[in-house]
Amino acid sequence: MAKGFQVRDPVHGFLGLCETETKLVRARLFQRLRGIRQLALANLVYPGALHTRFDHSLGVCHVAQSMAEQLGLGPDEIRLVRIAALLHDLGHGPFSHVSENLLDRYADRETLPLDQKKEKIHELVTGYWILNAPDIVDILGRDMCKQVTSLLAKGHGQPALHSIVSGPLDADKQDYLLRDSMFCGVEYGVFDIHQLHRSLLLYGPDEDQQLMIASDGVHAVEQYVLAKYYLTTSVYRHRVRLITDQMIVRALILGIEEDDLADLRRIYSFNNSAEFFDQYATWDDAKLLLSFGASAKPDTLCGKMLDWLQARQLHKLVYSERIRDFAEVKVKNLLLEVSKKSRDAFRKELEVAIAGIIKGQCLGDVDPRLVIVHGFDIKSVRTSSRNDEGSIMVACSPKPQPFEEESPLFSSINERYAEGSVEVYAPIVWETRSERRRAREALRQPIKEAIEAIAKTHLPGGA
Image 1 (cartoon, helix red, strand yellow):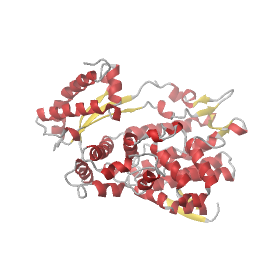
Image 2 (cartoon, one colour):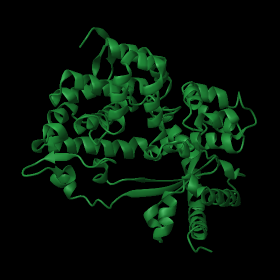
Image 3 (cartoon, rainbow, N blue to C red):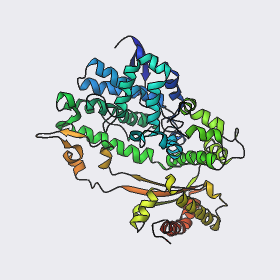
Image 4 (cartoon, rainbow, N blue to C red):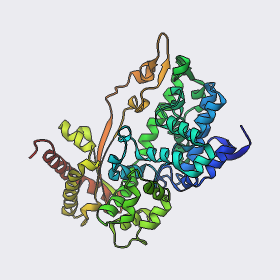
């Protein structure tokens, strides 16, 4: 590697950067990632979870090189893969994935070309900045910028290169599993990354080689997939993590739709214009909290909720139900979509009804706008071995097979098993566990009945 810079990383040890990569890291757009936490406000339940998109991006660059070297790629291919990995998260907004909810909600997708209308907005922002930000273009040159955006978007040259930065075994997932586990102080996401890399190989003709694993590498991949599943169920779907994420999302939605904060709306109103990209580049976690918290925006719902978050005065989980425990299939599907903008009328009606139930049980007079109904699912461990781009493939003879079919462990798992839930979070207070238990018991049946009754009115042909 050309003379550059070394960074001490707690996950991977010393990470080397060449001169070009060092210049990229020092660019203002990349330095902005220091202010964007990897796991939003997960530190309110895991105090060590203060790591950022900045250190994660450095780690992904390192893992990508390790994968590329294992596959025997040439120097030019390794350079391309490293730069793409380094810049892959450039477009994330405040609190990382929390911002995706707001961008999806307020983006004007009609301003996008047809082939980009369904893309994630933060990935489009990443591509725009790589192609248009003067400091990045000056460092890389226009040809390299085009190659990097092509690799991140739909692949460049060998499909295997794209799989290193975006696929079911990509460097991004490998780094965040190890990094999130370390900073959360848990072991759920730990796997043997070195053994996994030793299992990688290229398969197919030279012009169309695919990233696969050797047939004797199945057990290493089993460990990796299980790590991903357990970290999802134990950390990413932790009760407090879900509550804090949903409180941020609701605070920002209320700030835009109820408090009419034009500056806040402007952050998330993607319209594919240079003005949008320029202003979006100025925001990170701290600036968002300072600009729209209670001290800056007193007497706003947004300010109130952000202030609660900063003081760790969190909503309580007042109701949780497995979606499979509802009788009608159509109701189940509606509940899984309750957090989507297209289901706003359904969700708001539910929240008004639930606020009334809470008051009727003498648990407080709650503003319905502060009640949060949230639906989500956790895919089966077998399904979680794949991503949008397909399965991990095993280089078997006479032809490759999906990992979940070749693994004795995963082939025995019912793929249809997935755990979906609907939960309700509300700003009520209890002092003891017995108070919590009594409150939840009092609310459970009335809330379930309200959900079933209101859901039926929002189904096609409903009352």
